[in-house]
Length: 170
Figure 1: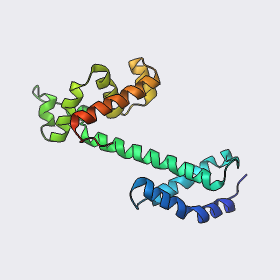
Figure 2: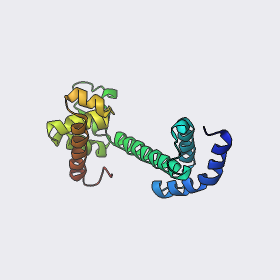
Figure 3: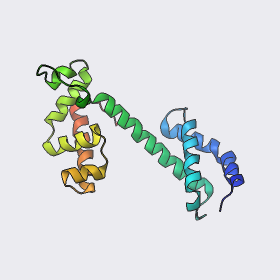
């Protein structure tokens, strides 16, 4: 069992190293929240630490996963900011989605590119990318395996990226 004093020592010993790692990993100097999140995850998972690796290695693996999660979150937020949610826009007087999109050219391009996708690509992009359903939920809805959802989503995003010529940066 690891006590508070040990955790405090780990923080003093490794927090600067973790911060430097995260700065390089994230490409920004604003990583204090990620260091804090790393140590919160350490505290929550402390009973799982078996001393098979050094504490530093364990901390860096947790920090890496925190960084990956943050990059995914940022990518999802960017994706959602580019793609409109039609459930929030009730077209009036028979207005088509294209006219609602007229306010944002980038969104209109993305919408039209999604419409050009094969139906299975369009389904998975809509469910995963726009509606933010989990892989499991999407698999259940489409009656696919989770691996098929992952691979089809990856391929669909690749086709979209090619179609859009750089609007959606990975």
